[in-house]
Image (cartoon, rainbow, N blue to C red; front, side):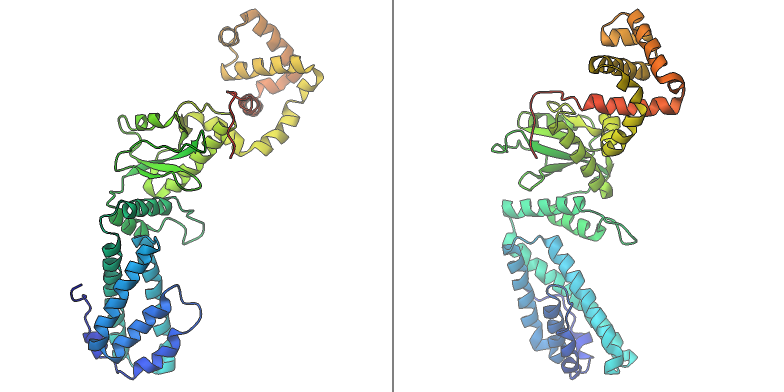
Length: 386
């Protein structure tokens, strides 16, 4: 194992009897997982720095091995150590007044604490690496853990955001170079019993065993990057979120998830790689589907006077007119009808809707509603359950 890089001189400068006075604080409630062991080792080094040194080092290495056997990623381990280290410092700060420590002793305690934290981190990592070194399963766990960290909900408030330190440690542990931009790809098996997955380049992070299979594609706008996903199509529905900075990968994942859900419902085509950026109107409309339906009852009320067949025909024509700037020739080609038929239907629509068809805002609202209803019609016969 070799000598740990632990400088015991700050511990030797701390009065040994202080350890007995500190120990009651190691048993306080509220310490993070492993926090009491962390504090107990710190007190042992105050009591007898030289003899406790090897014992504490051995315990740290054993802890690293144990955590590796439990499947805990090294980044998770370091996060646990940071929380324990902060708990130690809060405990020591809280004990200053009660123990009547002078400034010099407090300085030695601070120096000892930070050296101790560095040494423990090194030794736990050494034990973890010794247990997992060179195994494919270990590498897979590290990369899966990294992907989970990148996709974690950043939350809200002043402390919101990705834990950059944890991500950096996880990336180093996984041997992965963080890219400038990335896109998250949501994957849904066409057959739940068949999750065969083709090889991917080493810079692509993949997790197809979790509850929500996905991958992270670095630099997705580079030449040929999206073509990497085409071999997945026979077995997977593939929805690619927008390209974002790596720190915002969770946002890309959210939109990819929405697109995949619409594809499974038949709203979006599912036999091709679905780029969310190509379906923004549909995604936005379906995010506000309840509101759109409430608006539709008012904006499309004039069509209630018609038979269902007439309403369907005029709705289709109105949407085509709105999307093609009321150009009868283009709408006729799109709907495969004569331009004069388009003009006849337009006059009927003007009778029904009146000045609303001259109001750009009303036209935009009606177009959104009609677009949403058009997209609700399944584009294929297949459907996929959650």
